[in-house]
Image 1: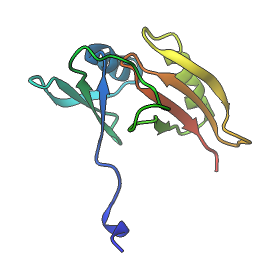
Image 2 (image 1 turned 180 degrees about the vertical axis):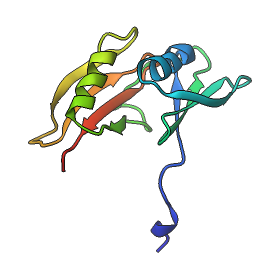
Image 3 (image 1 turned 90 degrees about the horizontal axis):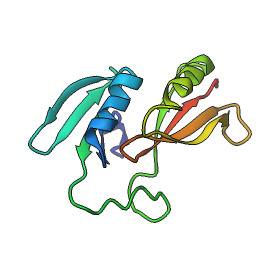
Image 4 (image 1 turned 120 degrees about the horizontal axis):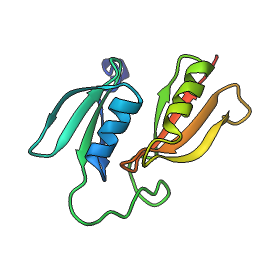
Length: 134
C-alpha cells in the first residue's frame, strides 16, 4: 500500500476566465499573498500560508462557464474555517464582492452540525467555505 507516501495536496491549479479579478478576490478580499507566477503563461500563485493555489488564465474564446454537472474535473474547492464567526465574517466580505455569485448563504450541510456556504469567484470557479465543530 502506498497511500502513506502521499502527505497531502501540494497545490491546486484553477483555470479562470479573468486572472486579475480572481487574484484580486483572493488577495484583496480574503487576504492571501501572491507568492509567484509565470507572466508568459500567464499565471499567478497565491497562498494563505497553509494552502497554495495556482491561477491560470483561460486561453481562447471558449468561455462556456463552469458546469459541475457536464464537465469532467473540478466540482468545487472547499476551504475549512476555524469557527462560525470566521465563516460569517468571510461571507460578509465576499457576498457583495465584484463578480462573486452567491449560490447559497451560510446554512447547515445536510443535518449539520457543519455550516457552509457556496459561491462562484469572479473567474468562474465554485468555492465552498465550511466550518465543522466536530
